[in-house]
Length: 190
Image (cartoon, one colour):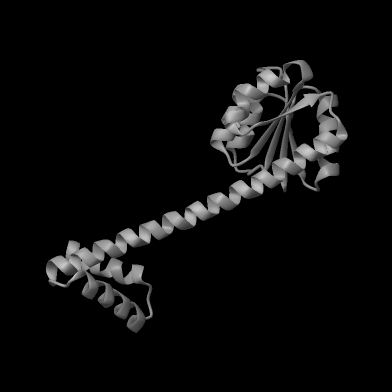
């Protein structure tokens, strides 16, 4: 983790959390005191890896803020709440992937939660990257198929001939099949 945002209306709690975070991971830590300030910071240019909300905040409890963070950023989110309400808060935010940690903070449990959050984050980012690669592959297949259909329609190629033509052109011209397909689409679909 490189960038962490700690949201706490209490300066003492914020400094304790920052100390624990810096012991658990060497990272940059920013602080916000209110939900409004945190929303502005999360929506800004800084990409936070983890956002920790020490609930309640002065302007809101923090549940809606955790949902906002989970939906509008790639940051992992953790909420620190009193032990007697941790189960009910957890039920409300678990569908958003928010981890709830009970107060008072136990150093060992906090470190374990940080490790779990980091491992989960790495897994999610890996899946996101895989999804992006698959979306690009699907896009390429669609473009190549459009080019094949154009060749079949206008030059009366069979699908096999169109496929072979695209592959041969790509090899001969040292271009990707996608580039050749785009050129064919420009010629025959415009």
